[in-house]
Image (cartoon, rainbow, N blue to C red; front, side, top):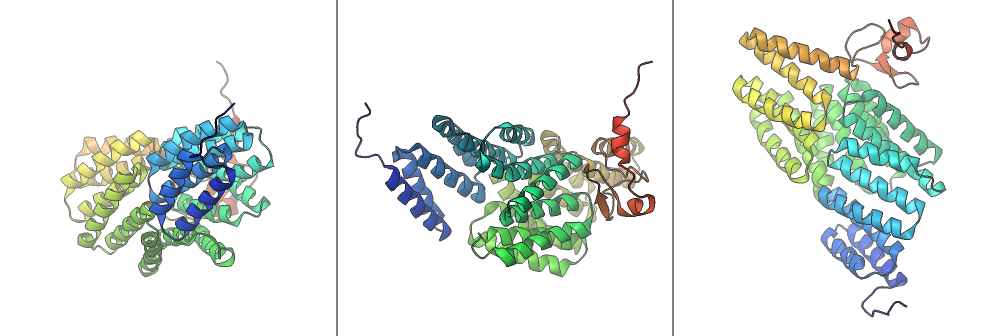
Amino acid sequence: MRLFNPWEMGQDQTKQQIEKGLHLYQSNQTEKALRVWMRVLEKSADPAGRFRVLGCLITAHAEMGRYKDMLKFAVVQIDTARELEDPDFLTESYLNLARSNEKLCEFQKTISYCKTCLNMQGTTVSMQLNGQVSLSMGNAFLGLSIFQKALECFEKALRYAHNNDDKMLECRVCCSLGNFYTQIKDYEKALFFPCKAAELVNDYGKGWSLKYRAMSQYHMAVAYRKLGRLADAMDCCEESMKIALQHGDRPLQALCLLCFADIHRSRRDVQTAFPRYDSSMSIMTEIGNRLGLVQVLLGVTKCWMIQKELDKALESIEKAQELAEGLGNKLGLLKLHCLCERIYRTREQQQELRDHVVKFHECVEEMELYCGMCGESIGEKNNQLQALPCSHFFHLKCLQTNGTRGCPNCRRLSVKPGYV
C-alpha cells in the first residue's frame, strides 16, 4: 500500500498549477512559469500530469533556445510515457525527442526517432501527430542536403495539415518549404511559401503565438534579400526581430541578426555587416545551432573576399568546413568549395583550384543538383523549378518543353546494372 504524502500534488492540483504556468508563460513571465512547472514535476503524483508538464517545459526550452535542456526533458518524458503504457503518449514523447535532436543539428538521430514514431501503432491521436513527425523529418533531411526526401516529407506534412484542417502545421510547413526553395534557388517559391504562411497567420492566427508571424516574416526577409529587394527584406526582418526580442526567442534573434548582416553585405556595407555576424555567431554558439554557424561563416567569408582579405577568408572557410563535415551538410560544403575555387582562381594556384573544382562537382553529383532533362545544374542561379509527384525536381522550362512522360530520374534509378 502506498503511503500518503501531504507534500505531493494530486491530479486536480497538478492541473491547476500547469494552467497557472501556462498563463504566466503566455504573459511573457517565462522564468516564473518555469519555476511553477518544475515544482509540479518535483511534487506531482499524477503521471499524466507529469507528462503534460514535461511537454510544457520542452516547448518553453525550445523557444528559448535551451536545446540541451529540451533534450533532457524529452528523455524524462519518454520514461513517463512508458510508465503510463499509452501508445499516444509514447508517440508524442518520441516526437519531442526527434525535435530536440533536430534543434541540436543531430539530423541522423532525428530521422531515426521520426521513423520510430511513424512505426508505432497508436490511436487516432497519434496519427494526427504524423504531420509534425513528417515536418521534423523533412527539416532533418534538408539539414543533410537530401533534397528529394526533404521535399517528400514536407509534402506529406502538408497533406496531413490539409486533411486535419491544421492551420498551424500548414504555416510551419510553408516556412520550411520557403527555406527549401531558398537553398535550391527558386526564389519565387522561396517567397511564395512564407507569404502563404503570413496569410494563414492573418486569417486564422488570432489566438496563435506571435512566433508564427515572426517566423513567416523572417523567411520572407530571406527571400526578399535573395531577390534583391533589400528594403522589403529589412522591413520584414525588423518586424521579426521585434517579436523575437519581446518574447526572448534567442534562436530567432540569431537568425534575424544573420539576415541583417546579409542585407548589409548585399549593400557592400561590410563594416555594418561584421558586428551583426559576430552577434549572430555568439547566440548560435550559445544555443548549439551548428548549421546556423555554417551560414554565418559563409557570410563572413564573403565579407573578407569583398575586402580582398583572402587569408582571412580561407580561415573562415576552414572553420565552416569542419562544422559542415561534422553535420553532413553537403550544400554547405558545395558552397565552400565554390568560394575556394574563386579564391584560388584569383591567386592563380592551379592545383588547389583543380582540387576544389573536382570536389564541387562531386557534391553536385551526390546531391543530384542537376536537371534530369537538360543536364544543367540546379541551385547555381535563380531558376523556376517544378517537382513531379515522386519529389524529383526539374527546371520548369524543361518540363514545359519536354512534357511529363514519367520521371527520367526514377527511370534511371530503376535500371539495374546486369552481371557480366
